[in-house]
Length: 39
Image (cartoon, rainbow, N blue to C red; front, side, top):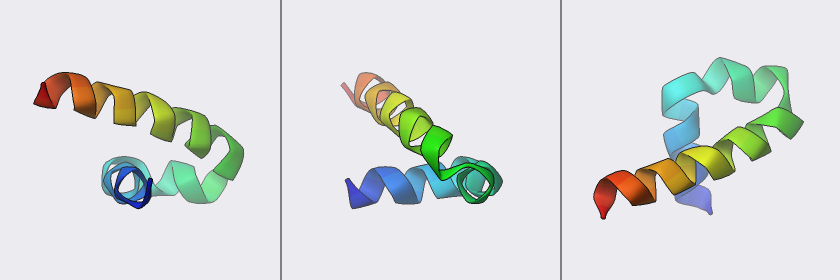
């Protein structure tokens, strides 16, 4: 959970500050993408 936020902030911290709602959706997408890349 916390890690996903850190990763997202590193990729696009501006978006997180602009829209926290969309950031949550994108964070979930990024988390899924990271899991795919790792595995």
